[in-house]
Image (cartoon, rainbow, N blue to C red; front, top):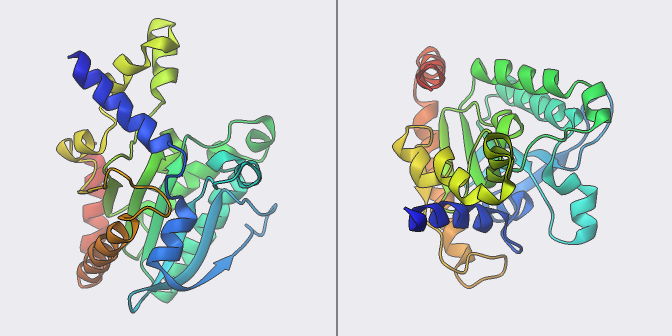
Length: 266
């Protein structure tokens, strides 16, 4: 049992590891002719979420990606990947435009959670997330969410009401961090390895539970600039393209009903 606990937490550590590809890296390697859009037209710009349009092979897509950055300067500018309300509203604005022009939506998720600061709460953090959940459930275009690192709580779910969930092998998805869970349940954050096992947050666990549809294998040295990094992107490009093409052929009413029932099962 101890081996399993350690195994689950090792996935968490891998999801948080330095040098792991960020949302921007996935955009640069998967999407051609990418044009970025900024701002929510209500308050301002949130650099923790990148939005824009481009091409996945020859298919026009809208991309919404959480990005933590690599350098200390980038991490601070992007709030360590924890979005503010304006980030979620910017994402929703692009989703509605994708719906209008018939573009599939690719969401790339990597966050420890939405930013819980006073300013974010004053600007309606909870409402911004709730509006995304509601609107994505009935968004009339195919949606795929790809988890590339951490998938923390409602901050991740706000970009994950999708027709399909793809997860990188070392990505995680949970209602709370292992440390937070251990602190609440046992008043001891040091029991995070035990909490990680209980939470069933690994890609393998979530596929078995029906939360995720595909787990993307990762090479051992999966870092930016590593020898095998490009192979992962080639595999992903094919998988995403095939899934989007399949989804576009389905009647929209059927796609929306299946999306709704998918979440009712949870």
